[in-house]
Length: 359
Image (tube, rainbow, N blue to C red; front, side, top):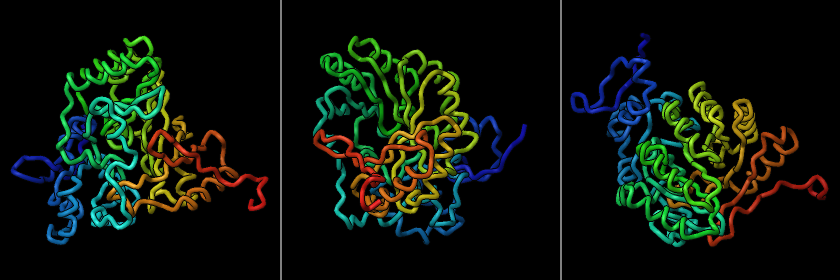
């Protein structure tokens, strides 16, 4: 069996060690999750730099921890600060400067929680935060406030409180299961939760939001797809932000979901230095079309505390969208939106009309 040499961030011998990993291990999502890069020392090892050289990142990790799967780490260049994949998952001292006044909860999600973890912002749908854990902690995340480890863990009792609220609210026809990443909770527990929601007569549609196909594609297993298929109609939204994230592994993960009859959509975030130019966005959207993943939203980066350096100007996004609108297939076009609190929803940020004088 072919084996590859990788740096493993486990506990063998008390720290990092370099060894040969079998294809079976590499393709085992639990192995990937156990061996995530989680510390400054491991980060320094990945970058082939002394730990002391990363001292400015120490305070960052005390505020916002790090987690990167070996798979996602293998896609990026650790030494290149401009690498668009590296920017999404490596800590940056700018995360704790708070120069532009971002807030921990820009969408006021905590205010709209009738029960802990369940966000009810819109009349006909709600969102269940079933965990704060992700395979990779994306530095632009709009729920960085959940990374502190102080939130309650995922238990059936906690999930049941959400189910009970949904059952008592007939206006709810759709439930979005999110997090963190819902695919990080035990599969049997997720199966039970989806089944309990499906048993409610007025719940017509379930939706899962997960970045696992991008950061941990091994998590999409035949067994998982069989389980999810039982709860259709179920939609699956993921988050590809750059064309280089579309690999044979992530493609296979999406194809497995599609083969199970589960539509897959994509919700990108406009990120400075990652995809805030026409060419990068075009290649991402072309790549998604090739793997039958429908571009759904392109979000303006939320004003989350610790993400100032990721936010591109809205005008930049509109200029990109205008060029895309004029030059690529409609199947490739997402809706560029600004998400707002207070029930105002997602405000479309339309490019210029060809009938306007400015066009």
